[in-house]
Image 1 (tube, helix red, strand yellow):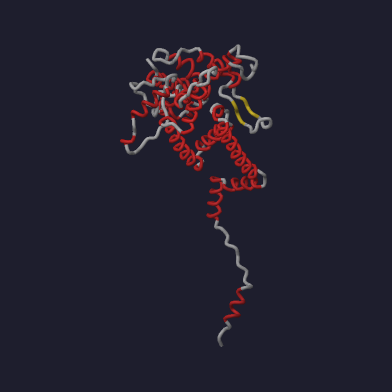
Image 2: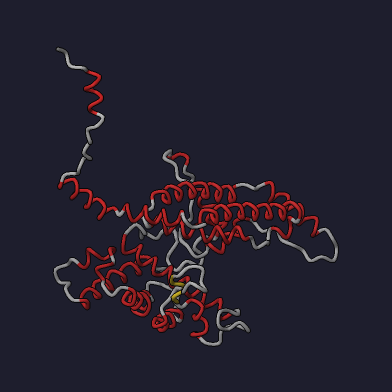
Length: 364
């Protein structure tokens, strides 16, 4: 007698299916994966954020930025002359967000790296356009200034070129961002030289910017020393500014002492509140004030003053910043030498490399 197939199928409905249990090896791999990737911690934080009003705040900020831009467009269309001197809140936001974007990219966030590349290319294209052609808005501004200058009794106004506006940035650095092509015929050396001349590129740069100089900032030690010099350059700018104008801790007039001049850039722990977010603000450590007092009094870097810059500025700064010299990758080769064992011996080798770089990059 044949067995009833339908009954057989019905019988299987009552059979409990045991859940598939991971093997000990799979459990080990899952635990190792979670330990290394921390995905669960990531998803927990995402869930925590979703329970707040942060997403609504984000969309509110985006809408607020659009509203700000609408205001900027109103100023441009209705008050074009004062608009060119207008202190834009969009510019302030751009400065803040690009610093955060840079921080994210250096932290290896792939989305930030991709966005940074995209924005940098677009901004370099815009920068080149501003330096090689005149926009319609600039032409209209020139006509407006000509009309103002035609009125007797009104002091004459000058049409400032884009290159002149950018000189404040260009004076301090030895390079300038420009488009480079795989098609070498499209790379114009003459265009770069013309732009560099208009910008007065590197006129106040601490290192040699002449065409005959033969150092290379791709050399790790040279790159490290340039970053140090750039740091001192920026600190000295703030000091000069506070000796000329009112500032943090001396709101009624220029700073009277060096300590007053640097007070606004002392590294300070920011607590939240009152700060928007906790962190560290400032540029220099309070205990390092003597280093910057000595560096501020140094003569400009030349081959004859390179030793003073090494011994009175850069080496004290490096020793203060790095309690462990092995954390400086640019000097890893020097520190591997067989004769280098103690911190004093490491310091000697680093100083030697720094002095060599300073001499190679210094003006005569």
